[in-house]
Structures are given as C-alpha cells and as structure tokens.
Length: 226
Image 1 (tube, rainbow, N blue to C red):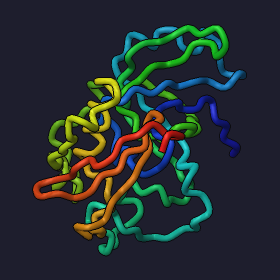
Image 2: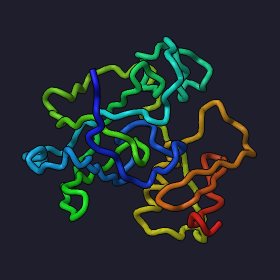
Image 3: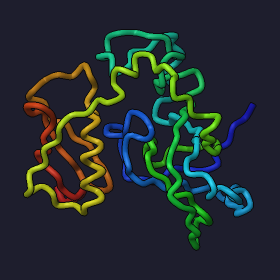
Image 4: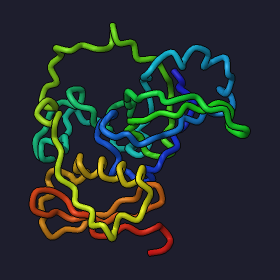
C-alpha cells in the first residue's frame, strides 16, 4: 500500500522542542496547505459545517528509529517503559500521528488554493498530512473513557513568568508562548535547576529556565538579531 501526503502544516513551530505534547493544548493557529494535486474546492465542500477535524499525519522527524515494542513516555520521567501501542510516541512501526484540531475557517488564496485555518495542532511546521476527517461528537466523544497513565497529567501546568521588559512580541504570540511554557516542554527526566532551555516560535528565539514554582523567560529576541 502506498500513502501520499495530501497537505502540509504551516505554523510557527520550526523545531520539535516546544511543540505541544498533545493536540488541543494550545490555541496556536496553523494553516493546512494542500498539495497541488489535491487543491480541488470540491474536496472541501461541506467541511465548514464541522467545528473540529481529525488529522492523520507523519512523524516525519522520527523516521529511521526501527521498531521497539516498548517506549519511555516523557511524562513518566523517561525511565519507565510501557508498550508502544499504549502510548502516542512518535517512534512507531508506521510513524503515523492522529490529532484533533479546531477548524477556524477556510481561506481562499491566490497561490495555494483553499487552505484550512485551524488551532490546537501539535504538528511541527512542514509536517506532511495524509488525511483529514471530520470530528463527529456523537461517535467520537466518550465522556467516561479511561485515559490510563495520561489521566494523571490531564490538568498539568506550571506557572510562567515573563518580565515586562521581555514582552516584546505581539499579544497573540505572547499568549501562545505562555501556553507552550505552561505545558512545560522540558523532558521530565531533566531536573537541573541551573539549565537554560531554548526554543523557536514564530521567528522568535526564546530562552527560559526553571524558577521556584515554574518557569521564567530570560530572553526573547527576533531570530537573526541575536
């Protein structure tokens, strides 16, 4: 069976570090841009009737690792192994991801056809998308479902301190950066209180470090101006 990418994601997540661990944890906006062969407006007829969409996509930055029946989820500290099919680890036999995103609107462009503007994606910029399906509440929502070890982290968040002098980006970008940091992008097995972490988002280079009760941003600069 051959599988073909129908679209790619465009957003501000230009590196893996900082990408939300699950879909729906950030309000950051992404655009789904279709490949030329799939830019028919007919393929999207009726899609605006749905508030959310399922994306099937490629863990394109995790190829070549080979199959392992167990993995070490970051939220379990990186040292406890569980079965790969009991996780959403990117290191899978077929490296397929599944995410639910909110559809904000369709947008007709002059050079890329109709694109989908969505929020809540946990995909890195440029990630190939293989399929899009509507989220159907009566079938897809199971209120009493058990979430295994992930239930222990459903409400996980940390405090984020950004000094006033570093709040130099626009309000939407600042809010999105705070959301990213609230979910603590650090690997759980890294607990060095002196370590400085860095990530990139929407053309900004952000540095942060642990502080009492959470994380503190210590640097925010436009990429290329560092």
